[in-house]
Image 1 (tube, rainbow, N blue to C red):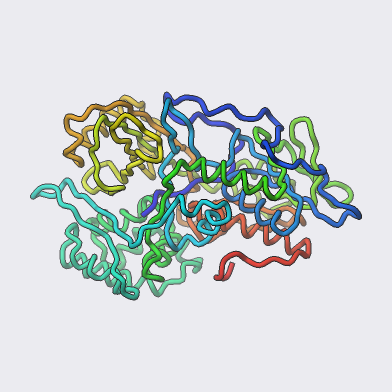
Image 2: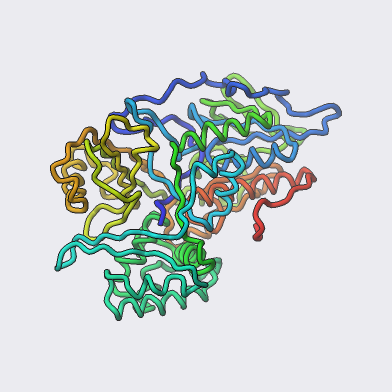
Length: 504
């Protein structure tokens, strides 16, 4: 199961990692991407027939909204405060390595993100597993380390996971039976039921006979990385959405995909090329300072040294930044945005002098280590050795720990998990921290998440934190971009089809 995805389009540059090299040089503030056709500032053609939209935020939500609007013939200006696109799913250079700020994966059921990959011509660079297969290593078993697997068979739901559950060595026979009963109960739930948003996942699991061990070895194994919260801190509505969609709809829904190239190549280079090809004016290192409604009903967006006119504005930035930009009256209670909490993700990066892991990834029980991925090939590591990324979701207790303390804690843990690491030389150890990586999926968060439309005509919201029905993932971010662009196109009277076959 995947580590949780990022917020979208924050407005300031962050260093890539503790002790990391700075990011590559970028255009100065207000400069368009090379190759972009600037177009007219007001975006209107002869007779004023062509509408102009300004998208604030160049993460996955903002990029998606810009692509959809431009595909429909709208003139688009995209603003991004960082020197690159991609939001918090990005890459940076550290010496000779190209490093992702964290491990980001997606599932076959993530149809919106798969659309995004296809749209930027990147699907072949982030392939899916042929069939779900997750190695689960328990190093705390009384009889020594035990390896189990969560994998599916080519059978219809729910039989596709029956054999895996029946042979799962990390649960007792009684616990496996109780998991099956809980899964059948979960399959009957409607994740959009507001009552589910008001209780936590652990309470529901307890009511359905799940032992602490079953929660640790199965439910949290999936839930923590996808929700970025353990069961007691997660909305049952969001948990139901994750498990029902990923495991109880289509047999292949939970097959895992991940980038085999740096994230920056997908979310910055290829996305930028797609935007440039549509004539989108992309301004990097450029933050919106103020948004206001003009007397003629159009919008003005003030950026350093320039004022942009627009027929529509999409705010695709985190909730706190959105709150600061919203005109008065745009939402019934804008302060509710400030009640949407955040949750951190910590990533540990270890470069060994030899190969210590033969699998592309695994997850662990009985250890503080959560998920470990081999990033050797995508990072461009040369000279032998292996580069592992350790992804730690819901990392509130460790997000501010010094690098030395994290190194002292996690290198011995990796040796417990990987015998080949014992005696291996460590060529590099560094840390990336996203203190506000996702919105916190706490019970009740559903009533705080706004939809794409606001009370101000022509002003729309996007971002994984908006009311997508999904937790804070790349999938949710792209879906929010669909919703914002679709609302704007409807207001413009532009014909458009939703990219997904399912209901928006």
